Length: 442
Image (cartoon, rainbow, N blue to C red; front, top):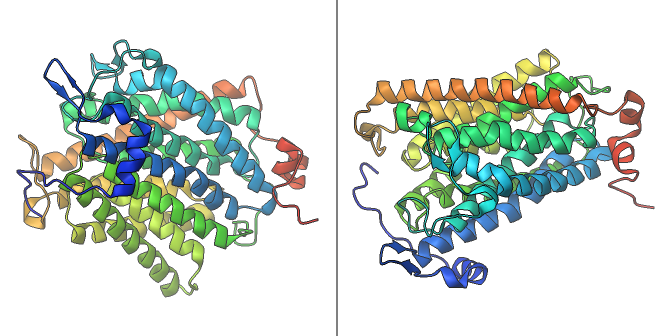
């Protein structure tokens, strides 16, 4: 790929344009004072891809998480996902967007007058996309991050604690990190940390937060002989993975904020990384005496998506293959270690997303080099400096996610218990939290 002095325009599929046009017909080619120009193609990409992401990710997480758990936890997973999406959407509009993407002041928190989205710009920054469309993309991202957390307390979480905790987490943990890296804050502007589509802000943050929640809540009352309860519907879990796969591809393309080569490159690299990761995890299991488990395929694909997201626009497809493979090697090893330690990360969020995203984000510093087909480095940066920026950025994300999650979780736990009783857990979290069951074939 090499350098990209000029971004190549893409032809947007007609269906995507139709979706975006239906959502915001008045946005195309708007102009204010002859300066703020909105590009209809760029807007179509961002709105269409964001909508596809939300349509795929939310049910995908329900199927992926629910299929990997006991049948008596499926309805709870679905209900928690919907409730989390609702409260996070409201808090994002009220405060989260401004904290993450408001006016840059000291580089720590956003400011300005975008509370309740009252004062959005005609366009976002130097893009040709309305700030309202940019806000839709960021809403899709935070919804993915918050709902993904449902795996951390699987089968034992108290919904009275879950909903306020995730709402607080989205504002207190996620939003500041988004500002530091995506909103012009200190990690990006002063250190040069890069994260195109969420290797650090989404995947690493969620993975570390999930590990902290898992430790706070404790392990499930009933574990299988291998230290991990058997999934009741691996086929559903694999189908859910497919939806999450599509959703993350859409988020990668939308991250370019323009219908250019960056969007196509990001989508292509994400697909290549996912494919590489899926096959490498299957191979790792086969070489250690395992069989072709559908959940291994699912885990590997998700690791590949996490590992390529930070540098999705910055590396070439061959490097994306390597990123996916390296992410799997780290995540696969970590998942086996956590199982031996009996840390009950039910859907392996820390190994798959946390370590997968972190590994890819750090290695992006090396594979961005022009000698390896990458786009090169920003002015004043080279491979060693970029590597240090990525390592420091990853360390900050880990520390902030761990400390902030612990504080938020314990604050809410002072009012509402984190988990249901052992007797209720044995009966099933569907009955305990919702007085019904997800599957009833009578």
